[in-house]
Image (cartoon, rainbow, N blue to C red; front, top):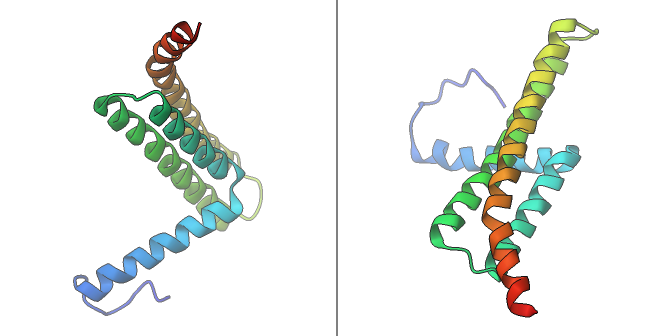
Length: 133
């Protein structure tokens, strides 16, 4: 793939090809990153639980944004890590800081997502258990 392509910056064919590049990126992050797969499986569990507990449309929107935001951020973290690895051949303290900062962003969003998930699911789980007994 030539990054300095002379082809037009606009056009339907270019637009269609961009989806192929995105799919290649998804395949790459799925194949190489355990944390991405964990986030995807966790997201699926969240959606199943949301369906079982009949969350509101607003809660669905929030959960969808959180799950897709999480996997998007994990993908961006991977891109940053790969870029740092590409540009730095030996250990460099700033390279480590860059990678640590990207990982910290993922951790912070995961914590935020978990807190919001608990706020949505705990009352519904409590009500479901209360009804059962």
